Image (tube, chains in turn yellow, red):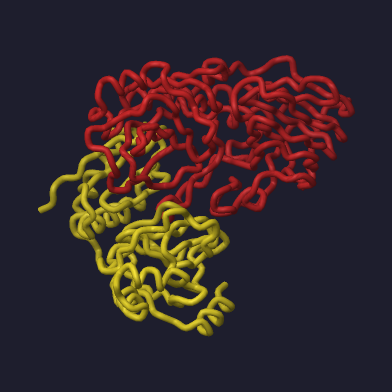
Length: 227
Length: 334
């Protein structure tokens, strides 16, 4: 049995269903399962999962706050039996060199060799908890705690799209070029966000992710071929 | 066709925003003041999802290569044409060759220009809105620039017989019930999870006229300046979805009101979320303006929202009767 979630109004047009207050894949799976179960409920404009919650943005001319809670409650059972058939994706990463200028610094900070940093980073199993911060940016769980490195004290003005970085105990991929303070250890040739694609973002909440090391020539070849 | 001679401070193509993509981190965006934009569209006979121009404080200079019906609503940014004022909140016919310009910003922050037919930019992910941070949608994902050419779809309003001169109808939509364009605004809000943890002194500070809008405010969020608010358990919360009007409290103690270009999730404590009915007031706040907050129940916020929607529905119905249902139609030039 699971504890009942709490329902919190986020103003008059959004309802937050909160499953817990800790970073736990089990809570995240319930949020994602509830989101899937509510796909056909009318009057919802957005279903936004996060670590341990699901925020439902709704048309307040269709639903009242209490009416929506009543409509959601029958679907909670579906959230308690999450469907685990999630996608498994492999993201190629060219580590170090011009694509990963901070690899050596991260290695020094972690008292590892650069090769060990690559082995540990590409050896991990990661979970996409949710997307946020920017289009296509995935909040990933699963970084080896030995790789935790604080971010740069001042953000760099231009981190390229596809840069793979570490900030504290998190790792992530920049979907678009932007300023940023993460320690950049590599870069993927994949395009994580393209508003012109039918599926604009490569990663989806719930995806299981691994990183696979590639060399600079392979990076160049795949970057060329990326749509 | 409309030629941009000067772009103004920040003028972007927006519609009602992009819904259904927040789970991928894509912000809904759209117009900040949905009331003023909706009225502008109603005034020129557009559907509710037509794209308008959102104009911030200092407006552009636009040359109309062909005549067009338009309406300017929202902030009073002193629109004029060849020396005569272009009155707001009503349909105006601008003859071919006119230059629409804007003078000093008198009140409010954002004006909306609707052209009959609506601006013609290709929809992306279901919307014509400009996402400035991600750089897509609207006009190439950016604000207007000099020498841009704006196309619009064909409108449904009849061309006036003497189409060579300016026409400004002698009636207008009264907006004072919906907006406060002066220097202060009351924002009603639904308290959030961290509201009751805020000491009474902090709650009173938010209720009084204590906080001003900071200069570092934009479509992403409005920063408030005033006495720092302190929660007994400061720090970060587990990131969760946030909404337009969500009042966050970062560790510095200066609250932030989230705008339409906010990130889709946030990790700061949430004091509450401004009621939809007061979003237009929030959108019209300028740096230096004073806000005070009044907690209301979610049921009351929803009732106020329904009443607003009903007033807009009646406005649309009554204006439909004012315009002749047949007659010559004005053709834009996309």
